[in-house]
Length: 356
Ligand code: B12
Ligand code: SF4
Ligand code: SF4
Image (tube, rainbow, N blue to C red):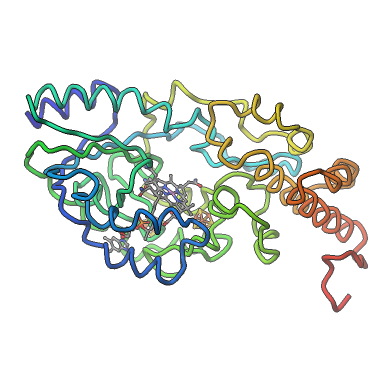
């Protein structure tokens, strides 16, 4: 049955399929400590699901097996962002696609139905893709899908690190696969590449410093110390992932390939700043970017313009500084001040250092 399930998963487009038990994750203590130290910042939902993340039995009573799936979003021959166009923003690669939670729902549902049929009467199964209280990377490592790198993302020897993790928790008993040992060796490239030193030590991320958190999950004002380090990143960050040498094995996968959103590749920042609520929803419909709502994305756009924009951005930012949304207005004011200081280094705006 195990090979039949694996074959069915590959047939449905998943790139890897591995099996582990539904026992508690080995790094549950580490997860608890991480929360205690406040590394999760404002992601209170991680605390709420803590007990379940520490024990899959609380997610599905009687679960025996976790089926772990990888879905690659690598882009072969993706051009580097070497042109460094200061007028354009950068989305994380995964976000230059339709929302993976939606795209993967259908093949996951199908695999779950097939699995329950193969298991026979009484089989119960639940599927997730970043949507459930599961410590996905720990369990996927135990299933041998890949190993947690020092940047904390899972790396596969077949796929590199550009892949999503999905899983099915089931009451069926299936023999587990071998876990994957860590293969970082002495490499520390991801830690050096991180612009904000968010990888506080190997295998541990301080989300409060991570640009992915600051641009996507943080609801309020971005701390001043991190704004200049964000560059043109307006939704997520890929620097630690891009630095990983295991990506020489990256391969495009079929499931996400069909859902690329090339219109999201390096969008014009001033154009984004002009979006009202309806235009924002229309532009990003079906993409993960909806998560930040207009207020979050335009906040990030202001920071990117503050970091990279020139005088031509000033009238647009000045208009945004009167936006009805205070979060946008505040970041626009900061950006105006940054640009003015660049154009005239003896600036005295509200964000200028006291010593000036
Ligand atoms: C919260 C969250 C975030 C937070 C915090 C990330 C973090 N590193 O903790 C923020 C918003 C910053 C974030 C960012 C990103 N995320 Co995220 N995120 C999650 C989420 C919902 C929970 C992660 C979590 O529990 N963190 C708490 C820490 C303590 O747990 P952990 O990171 O899983 O770490 C475990 C292992 O590393 C292991 N471990 C720790 N040390 C060691 C040491 C050794 C030797 C070993 C062997 C193991 C080991 O133990 C840890 C605790 O159990 C998961 C989905 C899920 N349900 O798991 C997605 C998930 C991790 N994210 C994902 C993605 C794609 C991203 C981004 C790449 C998006 C982007 N481009 O902006 C970045 C990557 C940033 C990074 N370097 O991690 C994918 C990762 C896929 C993969 N291949 O690993 C996931 C799995 C979603 C999915 N289903 O595909 N994310
Ligand atoms: S996603 Fe960016 S900010 Fe976050 S740890 Fe990786 S390189 Fe650092
Ligand atoms: S860049 Fe190096 S240290 Fe970081 S995850 Fe990849 S192999 Fe490990």
